[in-house]
Image (cartoon, rainbow, N blue to C red; front, side, top):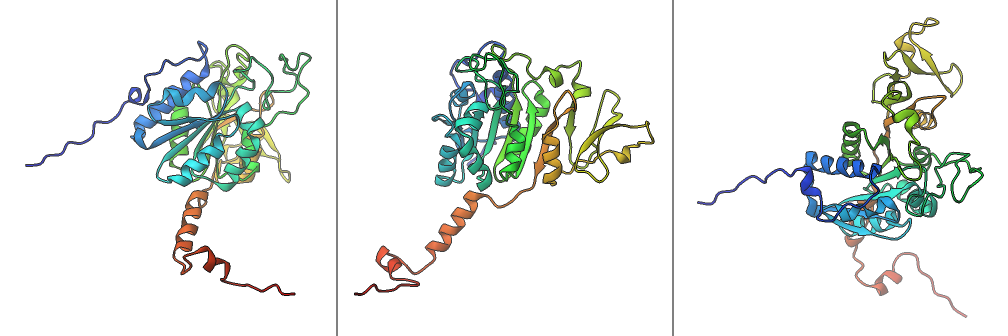
Length: 341
């Protein structure tokens, strides 16, 4: 008699490779690695069907530490390589690991096109607002005034807002989380994985060596309740230790303000309710930043559309169903003409 046994559920440690994890002690990348391994275990993801693709930077070491397939590619080109992987084998579960420098500077063009095409990938952008691997130069997301080896008098650049960038180029899924907020990070990663199409997740990640505590204004436990809003679809955008503060759309203006329930006749019904299918609202939320506003994390936008890889494969199937079987037949089909004289 033939008997079958159910597969043993994998644990987070089963997704870890045998390589020594080598980031600076205290780096936020350790927490993200832990969060991704936990996510994969809880979802029961098959390591043999999974590929991690990275570019260059501290975050790019990620594929070495996962017991899956992986590519450590070249600077900024991870989205392009990942697109090729997905088109070659659409059944693969493909993750892109990049940083604010790798993904938004030299890789900004590739990031733009992978998002507008809506390739079915999980794209995780580790944002620490600095170049960590090359020793602390300012990055595309560094705030004005950032002092670094490349901007000793302070940066004069207007920073890129990753979530705003993603929304602006047509991404269909845009979310944010924090490296150390494990339960929230795991839930966001699960949502990203469930989304069919390009999922863009910005993860605020602390660089203890070159930009320590850059996000402390909204991540420190003492201030988090007053300086963070966890966006949840269909629920009011409330914050504060007693959840009496909220976001409100100014009458007749596409502009957000903070209101307090119980003051000036304000009730909870006056507070904006999050609609993750509303791109305009997501864009407004993405632009808020401390100290004037709390930082909004969670799924800012989710509005699925057909994925690029799915449409390419469907097109190939249609092409294969034609009666044209050679280049000569193709060149002499459809509208043709002869050049004479």
